[in-house]
Structure formats: C-alpha cells, structure tokens
Image (cartoon, helix red, strand yellow):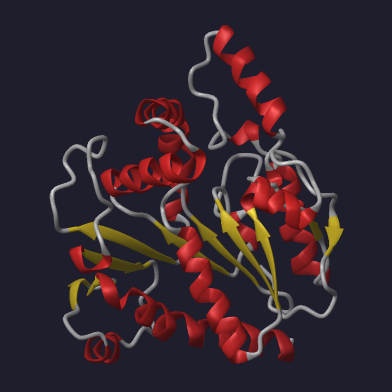
Amino acid sequence: MSRKHPIISVTGSSGSGTTTIKNTFDQIFRREGIRAVSIEGDAFHRYDRAAMKAELARRTEAGDHTFSHFSLDANDLEKLEQVFRDYGATGMGETRHYIHDEDEAKEWGVTAGSFTPWAKFDPTSDLLFYEGLHGAVRTETLDIAGHADLKIGVVPVINLEWIQKIHRDKASRGYSTEAVTDVILRRMHAYVHVICPQFTQTDINFQRVPVVDTSDPFIARWIPTADESLVVIRFKNPRGIDFPYLTSMLQGSWMSRANSIVIPGPKLDLAMQLILTPMILRLVSESKRA
C-alpha cells in the first residue's frame, strides 16, 4: 500500500460484472478530474490464445482437468505484483492489452488472441486502477492484495454468474451451452481455491442476488434484470460508513447485518457513486499530501 501512489483493485470472475463496475469508476474519474491508469487482468495471462490452447491440450492429456485462466500458473502474477509494487513506490509501471476479437485487433493493429507490446504508464497519473481475476490474491509467495489501497469484490451468486457467462459467451463468442459448461467445470477448482479466497481480502463486496428462479442456469432463457435483483454490499470494516445516510438516499434499502446493506438492483450505480466517490477522493487527497 502506498499513500503517495494509491491503487484500486476490482476483482471478480469472468461474467461477474466487473466491466460494469469499471464503467462506474470511469464516470467518477471523469467527473472528479482524476487521472487514472487502468490495467486489465487479461494483460497478465501467461499465454496467448494459441499457446493457451496448446497448454490446455497438454494438461488434459496429462490428466489435469482443472487448468484454466483462473489458475494461478496460467497467469504471470509475479509480474502483476511487481507492477503494483513499482507503482506504489514510484507511480510508474507498464502494461499491455490482450486482444479478444477482430474489433480490438483493428483498433490495436495486433492479431486477435495475442498481446500488444508492453507500454509505460502515463507519469502524471493520480492512481492505478486494476480490473480482473486476481487483484486480491494472497498466497505463501504472492501478496497482490497487500499492495492495493482499496479492494472491491464483484460477486454475483453463483447461478447468476453462470447465467451471465453462458449468455455472454454464446452471444459474443459463438460458444454452445455445452462448450461454456465445459469451461465452467474446468474452472471450478480454481474458482474455489483462487477466486473465492480473494473476497475475504476485499474491503467492499458487491453481490447481486436475483429474486427470480435461477435454479437451472444452463437452461435460463434470460439474464435476470436489475429490477429482478437485490445487491448485498458488505464492508470489511464498517467504521466511518454512514449507513443512515445511505439508507435514506437509497430508497428501499435496509441493513441486513452490522456491516452490510441490501439495496434494490437498479440502485447499484447510485450506491457505488455515494460509497466510492468519497473513498477515491480521500485516496487522491492523501496522495497529494504525502
């Protein structure tokens, strides 16, 4: 952690909604005139698409049916931790982009499924913003969580997360339900042992809970909407959180525990604006005084 060069880390698995959360952060950064350097977890995959396909085949042939992008060794997390460490110490670092599709390939001039070259950060940034799978990892040899000043978890209940992933991968990647199901099963070991433990490290978790039947996510025809959902917001340390103010501003919300508030799904963006804006401004203000 660094008072002079703060780091915000948003962590959630594929299909959890971290991109939506990133858009809210971007709105806050623009409105408050904050210069943020953004990095994506995909930039730290260890393999490009072709190499990952070959590695998956090799692992499967060897009897390993748990290797996936969720796995620690499928990602260069030592590099990610070094980027966090360097930014906290100097305000500098580097990142790259993983090119997902042909539209991104045209934008960046790099083949889909590969990476852009590493590039240095803007030296005038106010903070570093990370969004991806491993932003709060803590193991015997890694402490990515320890370098982040504000850690956010995005954690839909598991059936909703699967529904979102199935619909996204079928629509944008042309996968069948069976193919997406195979990916989910392959990822389950790392989901339990790598993804879930990070949510005990996060400062705030946003968990969307549908209030419609999602008992069989593999046949769900629609993704539950915000109107069909509640969001549970859990604070690791509720000290300083003005819950009476939040419940008065977020109509229909209530306290479920001493550190948790439940809000209607459509209020998520407003809740994030109310909760996160003062936290971000405090980080930037403290960094300028450091």
